[in-house]
Length: 215
Image (cartoon, rainbow, N blue to C red; front, side):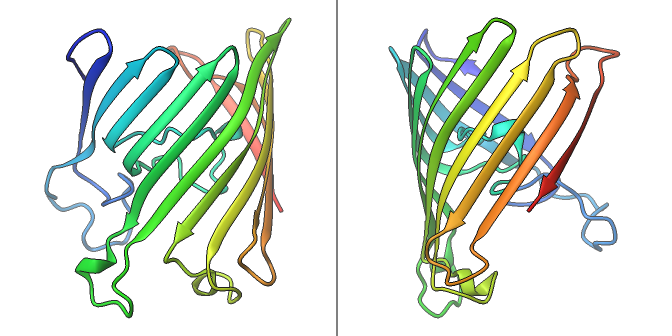
């Protein structure tokens, strides 16, 4: 990270594994384990003006995920595009426009890029030893097709509602729930995840254990 001034910074991260959206290696993949090319996993400009923050480039996922769940996005997903956020006294808004798949460079039927328009609004605060966060997200994947995933519908248009609460103590307890619905699909169009975690892996010797139910 390079601090240009008090409000502007340039953030870079190098990686050698995975690919466009992940640094994971898959066991059994003949391409893994070999010396791969070094690439910029993240490279973006961040600028802050009061309660507004702007990110441009390939960035760490700026969208809130209750309990850091992976119902919609993997934990190592780094979107590429532009993102703006607003935070004021616990109220926050995230707006983003990202490229997901550049089909114009491929031999696809329509040649249209898959893009994501993201809108998220929520509120987070603390009451005594309890810290909570609740909100809603809308994700519109343009030029994508739900029929490739579920066998129904023509697009991916997701509405998510989420809630998270943490009881702060030596080993914090976290409960989270997130529900999502795809309005473009004709069936099998809802999903939910409920998670419970104890502890936090931060310092040496710390620990964490958790479980979730996916419905």
